Picture (cartoon, helix red, strand yellow):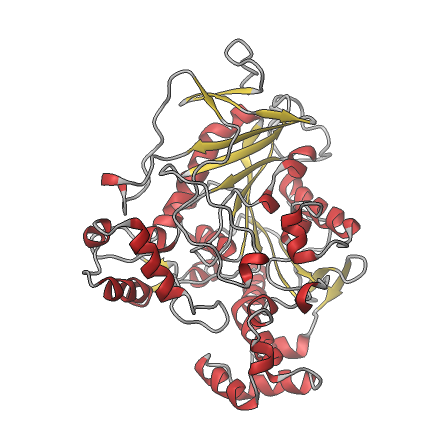
Length: 504
């Protein structure tokens, strides 16, 4: 365990890492170290290449401001008002942040029966943000790690390459660069986190949406084996495409730019022009309605096969897993854009065929939801196909394979904002216990229940510390902890008729 390096740092908490000394900020017993490079800037000869370890620095490096964010564009209206997505200029976008109780050293005595080693290292949580692989960063205020550190966890949040820079597929460059960045960040955590008071053998990786899909891929990847002990998948599921399918978005951008679909050609394109072309190609894409989007690719290296197949075959069987969805995931994409109103019965049937959803399955949902509009039923079907059903299948595979414990949850508190109800991303302010921030209230409104945030945040902390969030693990009765509406409660086999319709 590294000690406070007071002889090198004045006016702030200090940590010595293998690359040099960092000076952070201290408030109410929590130290924050922001913008720490875990890899070299992916520019010049390193653009479209696997991440290289960060280089050492001389003297004291200030770590009191967020580092550069990956190249991206803001969410398009009206989502830009609901999902804050700050941009920080600079090339060094492969950086991370650490929040830790201070002083960093000290026993983790608040965890009776914890199976961690006895050196005083604290449980570590590593956050991987979402954003459809084209948006987001660790600088989003909702992801502030103070509450986790307050409760005895070392919280790390990570930036990684986005869009075509991170998930483009080229014949002359490695695939899945964004995933490789995440693996490099986790490697940094293993090698450095003890200096911040963390236990490298008690790392929980957690993420939402594209971050959760990334975690499912990390669980399946041989390159990430041993880098974490527990995982949380929020509103995501194992998902990947073949190289040929994943390449289509890159090819569409190349056609718009009128350049070859190679990393060499893309490296010669002005970054702003490249972002403009990427936005034009992906602007109508949508996790539910599809269109051109970026995908994790089955590349034979980071991912030897589809992550769902690898996990079903026992990959990460020793990793404890917590996963779940929100009751009304689809409403974030459908309601602000008016899809729930515009989709009638005819359009619903067309989109169901396009999405390869059986009429028999759709009939079960329509009969069980007679008061809901065709667009609403379509949204539930699409979200279940993408998220809830694959999560249930993975939980069943893990149960049959006698793996480490699996836990499922559902977040159901309905936001009053725009009628979004329990939509995609709404749970984030509850998990991070940041309901008081204006950026969180953009989605929750001003009166979100703090008691629910306290309970949900505590479950995530307990899972990171002990491997058990506070309810029964997955078993044949299909227990799901529901967070709202009302007090948290355990429900067995929620909406079972709809789930079973996919099995027949």
